[in-house]
Image (cartoon, rainbow, N blue to C red; front, side, top):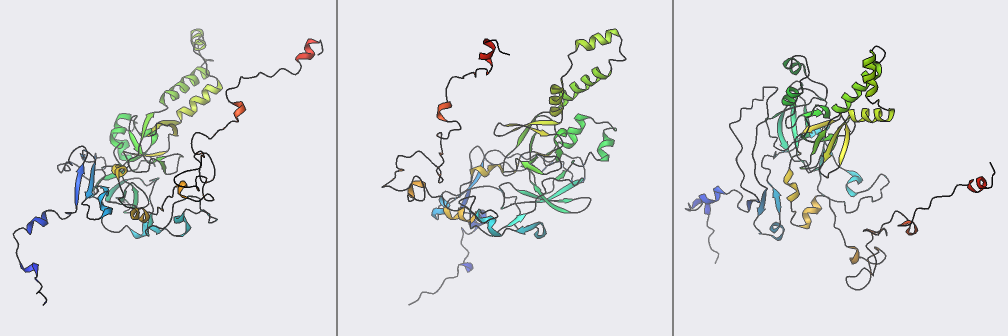
Length: 414
């Protein structure tokens, strides 16, 4: 005989209120360094003021969300905590669908140029403004997740034109912040506040804030920047991934001063007295090669990337102050192979598991690569075996070629 079904909704259990305290009982927050501190609610930030520092937000430690191992795929799943992200859909007119062979790692002729790509969830490409040429303050409407990149994007609205656009979000940027771009020049109200004269200290204090886009020559030395451009008038191309940044190391002010002194020394010799001529002669004149080197250094800004590489970038290139958002992305663990397939990543098969015709390591019995040095699927040496010089040129004595006419000169011929 069937038992009558009991409706639990009509029964008031004494421990029912415990489930309302933990809406996500299957997940928990773990920190490697400390607990998360709440955001400072007593900030004096006023969005209506053009020049106002962004609010400070203190978040200590590496915060990750773990899950109870109810399934094998949840046992090793680790995700960074981004509860401030927008839960809805993006602005439809600022996106376009990602279709065609680009999802499968193919080039324009249809050949596979990037392996292990294919499938994936349907997605739309967000149109991100990397150059940010529009002047004036922009209010951050919300922070969104972009499936096409690891960093987050921010939806901003211009206070002058009310136009919406997507930009790369800096770490710590939240809805309600005001950011501004100075790529088109210094605004009039900032000129009036400085008295019509460029004051480097005041200019840096008013402009070098998190999320603002500036030319590299306006950014103070030692500032962390991201979304750095490589050509004037073009958008940012460097440091656009999650948690990346570059450091402004030096500017060309000293080289510019040296060029001005050299110019004064070369142009003012005709009107100088004898003492002035003697002093100018004592000063070492610059050669054309040295002058060209100084001119190149004066037009560029030295930046250091996270890899340690030091690059000279033109001073008119764009850069955004701060660090790219979502820095804890590097601690993400997918947890299962199916999650990688959702992200357009196909399986990677080991070469020793293939047949001999498919890979140089293939064939044989058991785990063996047949006494072959590590090679790529196309036969190129994958490790230190790749040589750029032939073997007979390595560690050989340098032989100075004999002059052709040396024998003739000894015999007295001209």
